[in-house]
Every structure is written in C-alpha cells, then in structure tokens.
Length: 361
Image (cartoon, rainbow, N blue to C red; front, side, top):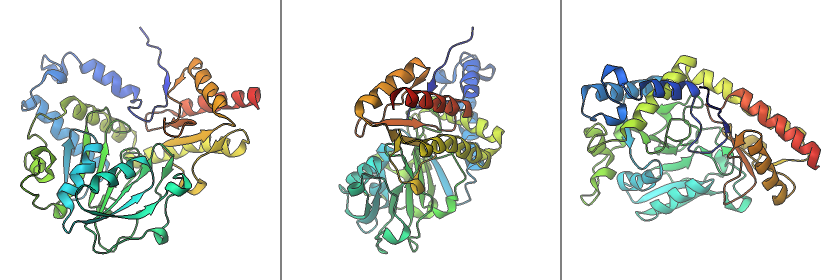
C-alpha cells in the first residue's frame, strides 16, 4: 500500500531520503540475516561493528577526510559539544567566537563558563542578516581556537568562506549544512554537527577532530565529555546511539551513490536558485538575509504582515506541505531544503507561493 507523504520543510529533525527510509524498512525486522533488527543488536556484536566501521569509512570517503583526523560519534547532538569544546580545548583560557545566530550565541555562552571568550563578531545589531567579512573579524592570535557556525538555520545565512586565523585552530559547527557540499576538512581543527538535518536522525552528534588538537583534560572532566577518551574507546565508552549511526550509514550510501558531495552541491544550488529567483522577482515576499550571505539550506522570508504569514502556513498545510512556519523567536516563514528535499518539492512550494501572492496582494 502506497503511503501518502507530505513535503516536510522542517529545519530539524528533517525529511530523510525515501530510498533511505525504504532500505531501513526492508531491514527493520531482520538485518543481514541476523534474525534481529539493528535496534536490538548489541553494539559489541560482529554484525553491529560491521555497520559501525562501514559508517565511519563512508564518512571519511564522502567528506574526503585526510589522515590525521579522528571521527567520533557523540550522544547529545551538537549542543552537548558547546560545553565539550571549551572543556577539551581551552589551553590558555581564551577563545574567539563569531556570533552570527542563535546557536553560535549559545555556544559562546557555554564557553564563557570555562574561560575568557572574546566576541570576534556579533551580528545581533543587524538582526543576524550578515556574515562578517574577513576584515570585520576581530581575532586574537593567542586564542586557543576560533569558533563559528557555518549555517544559521533560524536566520537563513551561511558562511561562503573559511576565515584566515593565522594558525589558530578553527572549530566549526556545521550542523545544518554538513554533507551539502564539499568541504576542505584540512582547514579545520574540528568540525562537529548534530545529525538530524542532513545526516540522519536525532540523538547523534558527529565530531571530526584533528589529532594534534587533542590534549589532556582536567581530572574533573566527566568521562563522556572527554574527546580523547571517546576516541580511545572508538565512541563506545558506553552504548552509542546505535540506530542513529546505522541511519547515517544509509544516508552516506545514498549520497555516495548519487555522485558524492560535488553532485549534491549542484542539486542544492539548483533547488535554492528556484526559490531565491522567485523571491527576488516578487514585491510580496521579503527575504531576511542579505543576498551575499544566503543559505542554500534554510530560506527565510516574510509577507507584509504576521497575519498573512500565519495564513500562508495554514494554507500550505492543506497543499501537502508542512513545517514552513519560521522559528518561534523570529516568526515569518522558513523553508528548509536539505539534501533530501527533491527539486519537485521546491517547485511545488514556488507554485503555491505564486498562487498565494495573486490572491493576497
């Protein structure tokens, strides 16, 4: 029986590729003739360890992760790592944070609990419409690291360059644009992300860490918050988020089969262009972010009033689209068009937007 599916524009947890869901369904009751679901497996079993090792190998292949980096699977998503990062990497008690949205602000606030945080840039005064240029970043050469969030889901902005930090390690939260395009991992001391946007399902965080960044942590550091200990135990000091790691592996297989991140970037640029081109041609809708900073993953905009925004969301649901309401902190409308969103889904959204504009302008 065919199941009717909606177009899910949620910022996370987000839609998964249908091919991934179908494969997970096929393997749900009996994975690889094991007689059990992946959900039921011991994380120490040979069947599960094969899944685990394959997922790590695929992530290394798809992201072209060079030698000298470790991959860690973390429970607690990206938010837990807001605390782990300063607990593990503050050598001299100082760090630089570029605050370009809600999550980089939260990361900065957590870091303040552990040392001296300098604000290298703060976009609050312009409602986070901007990403700073290199010249606007106020960086300290003595900082332990520079932290920024690569894509801001709430405000719809994205960094289009990797900042020059004069040798200070860069730690980047890529939760909402990881796996959307090729990334030169060698430019980063650490990349981390929550999985529930482009990588899979909620409950898993991923960290890609340059080995030379690791250092002994204070004795009082909780064991599960010690990256070195996690690496020494291959992410299995305790039971890992086993099923979420399995789903990540399925997503990586899907991306690899489509041609990798180069092909994914082409698809994502094409989808975003369809939506942004229409928004730029319309006087009815207004985008939040400045044009040069626009996110390929999260497109944020408003109509002329909150009442019309609410009506737009209400009517979009009747048209088979869901989760287009903007974040509760800013309102408006947000279309998250992650990897799994098909081009046809964006075209359907634009067709609805045109029809809605004609009726309400």
